[in-house]
Length: 372
Ligand code: SAH
Ligand code: SF4
Image (cartoon, rainbow, N blue to C red):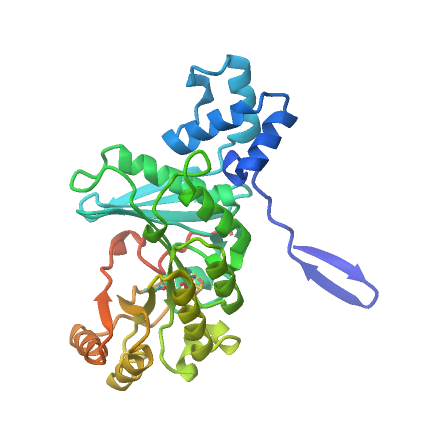
């Protein structure tokens, strides 16, 4: 913190957190061509580097046969800085869930989680260090926002997850990363430009990006309505997940403070518009909290609200977070809740609580700035 002396006033200003170096994955195809040319290299190098990075997840130019040692050094130095320093990697669920904590430039810590299932391998990635929205049941929300991640810091989490999946670490699953969910730390739509660029790197065909399927990429948001509209216009048919948590504004105001700005009716209308424009069904996330939002009348109200919409409901048993007195609904209350919403004609799934014992489950991601 720096104190600014102004006549009669003392203001406190946060120092700007250190920004990461520019990385190949920050750049669009056009920018890559310009960058290599500006560095005195022939334009075709851009395509070669992209094919290595996005096609083979390869960040070791020293081993690329097409480059001289000098050029390899130049490429590494200019465009492949190490953005994620691994602090810890923990596994649970018999090795099928791996949580990695990364230290970013400037010291902020973020986490990504890879979950292996029989039919898919899913990476849960972070878009911000901390989060400024402040939902009271979420560990990330309790620490406030440290900074936005750069595009490449997001893409590098994906590349690392691809490497893990391809390494044969998950013996009962496909040996490639199939799905990505933006459900780690942060509110992705609050870091909109970096998010959209990262989505392009993930989805665009070679040599633009990893060429992963857009429908297997899910962006979860608390409902920043203008950004939801923007995302719908991007022409990236990713799946949208809307974190609702209550059918009524009175409760949602307390669970998701930004509801004061964009209430239930507005966020649902924006999600409906998203579905209309993209043709993609969206999901509603509902963390079920004992005696807070798990009452039968709320289940009925939720069913009424969602019936007829192009959506399905994902019930997430609350993961307890340190310092919060809230806990998951009782199993029979959860069953009744799910039953009542289904009765209204809404498709419902109950999310498993992968990673709970390593604090890798939703809302438990609470890495913070080291030493803070
Ligand atoms: N900020 C975005 C995405 C990250 S949070 C959002 O809120 O949608 C990803 C999901 O985890 C959200 O649905 C969020 O509501 C949920 N979540 C947060 N804390 C949780 C907790 N303690 N238990 C269960 N789910 C939680
Ligand atoms: Fe931020 Fe999402 Fe946590 Fe709310 S639930 S504090 S929006 S990360």
